[in-house]
Length: 294
Image (tube, rainbow, N blue to C red; front, side, top):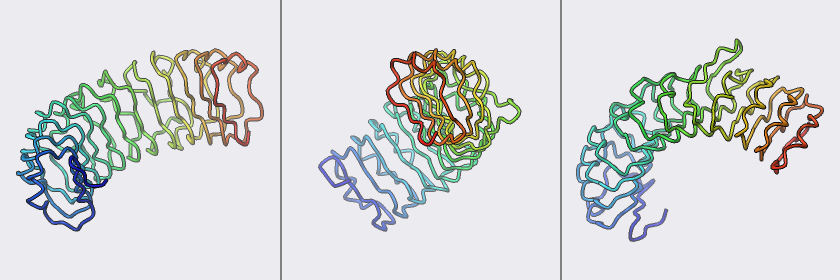
């Protein structure tokens, strides 16, 4: 990001504090201080009253001033790669326009205190942490639409996710999800649109209940060690995209031919899959069919 009248880029400058003159740039809308050993976001951040986006990834943050709430128009905050960030100021719940929060790569084993007070947030990135569960207070994130939990240590889909009634997209790539015994519970809201569980190599089976997701449009079970698909997949008439690359499929159920809204079908790398069902000819909307080495 280059400096402009409304954007200030101070990233990767070995700064131990934000230069005082920065706080005189009243028109600043984007501030990037990433990859500086700052240790904190100071109280005078309140001077940047027009700020809409704050990037402070990799700043060794231990403290964020409650005055950040005086940046009334903040929409996006990136505090990723700050392994000592255990608490967010409670005052952040006053940020009425805050839509996006990133806390990836923070070595989190639990959510930072006060995170679940941020009721306006629509996208939360918690990827590349050490999370194994989510507590019920995550339901405080009432407007959440996108939840990114890639590269954590989840063995199950947390029950708390079901309470996020507006959730449209759940990403849980590269976790430790296991469904060998068909006991993985699909703890997601019924109106979710995208479910991405790619590269959970011990999943083995698609979770039961997928056909009950009344608005689901895209599923990604690539590289999940899946050998068979249930006939019930043909009941999911809303599906537009199916990604099943790199699995162990030998056949597709004939019920695939009932997926009349399907536009994308990715089967690349299923080396044991020798043929496709003739019923696929019914899929008039299918534009992108990747069969790779099949």
